[in-house]
Amino acid sequence: MTVPRTSKPAATATRKPFPWQKVIQLLALVVFIVLLVVGKNQLWMLLFAAGTILTIFFGRFYCGWLCPMQTIMTAVDGAGRKVRLKKRAIPKWIQHPAVRIVALILFLAPLALTVITGRRLPVLPALVIIAAVLTVFFPAALWHRFLCPFGTILSLPARGTKRFLKINRDSCVSCGVCQVTCPGGAITQDDAGQYTIDQRYCLQCSECRENCAQQSIDFGG
Image (cartoon, rainbow, N blue to C red; front, side):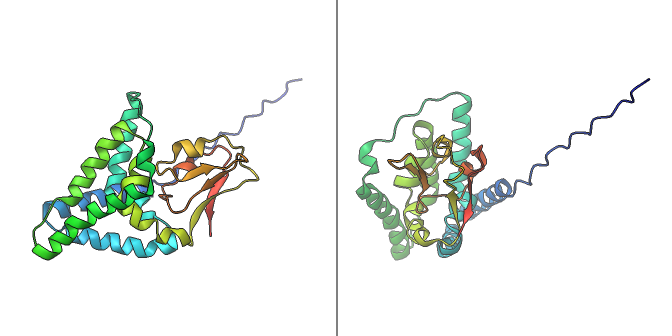
């Protein structure tokens, strides 16, 4: 008696979602470059101002979706990993709150000078270059959390954001992958070994969410 062969069901390929975030990041970078070329930097500052207001509702989405520095830093960081570039630890003195205040003042002073005198200074291009160079030698969190003036401003409304990434402690196995992959240095571990996302520093980039094998990170609010 011949047993009929049963055909195995064809494996259904998992369809990857459209990379909206990367597309928006690239478009924002193009717009940023065009505005710099035509000398309309102030228009980008208007976009940042709008992003600051919306941070109350959506968190620091400006950082993870629109910021040209973040887009360029991600590319630089990725290139560094490919060549296995070893980075230095973030110096302790840079982590002092006073450093963030000084960095913010150094950012606001040239802007005030531009408003008063009308003289345009290349503040935004300088920030992009500084951020990219620092990312070659240090973790991205050095810039995002401790030096970026935009990040310092956005961290204020981000405290009470209505939409935020949250770690589910019931399914979290405390592997620490989220903390390692977070470019903003927003994830900390308490004495009990539990991980928490500090919304003040979360860039809304979803790196932690995408790298969590347990799928323990999702949006709350």
